[in-house]
Amino acid sequence: MPAPTLRTARLTIRPMRLDDAADLAERRSDPETAAFQAWTPPYPLDRAVALIDDMITLGGPATGEWFQFALERDADGVVVGDVALRLDPDGHNGEVGFTLHRWARGQGYATEASVAVIDYGFPEWNLHRFEATIDPRNAASAAVLTRLGFRHEGTAIESYWLGDVVTDSASFGLLRREWEARRA
Image (cartoon, rainbow, N blue to C red; front, side):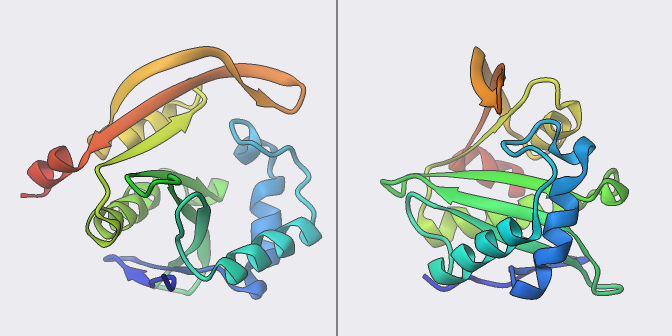
């Protein structure tokens, strides 16, 4: 299915383009941004280009895949971060993830973009639930998920590897009927 462009009050949530590569490499190279993520800095430009090439080839969200969207601020066209949608191989569940530039955090962009992706994902893909997995030390992401109505469903101890370091993994979930009740 082709990648949609989603709009919110302040953001255009669009498929990544090759001209986003330098920004993506910069964002992912920030040690504070990468602290709770699956990559280690620095994040080279060629790796960012390869990720975006993969998104372009994929063409849009697809079962069994992650799809990254750029978050472009409407006021000035600046990319503040990205939001990702993963569909499980059976197409029953979605997963959401988000990464913002350090200077863009605390302004509601992650919540705003995630609402748009969830509002898109549930009906478009007829999803039953959304999930998110974070490092439990990532209090800011946990707060975003809680604002969205996700519930903490458990923490797997020493289950996630960040390079050579093992850490815990906190799982969050949100059922479609819960989302619909909150949105009503």
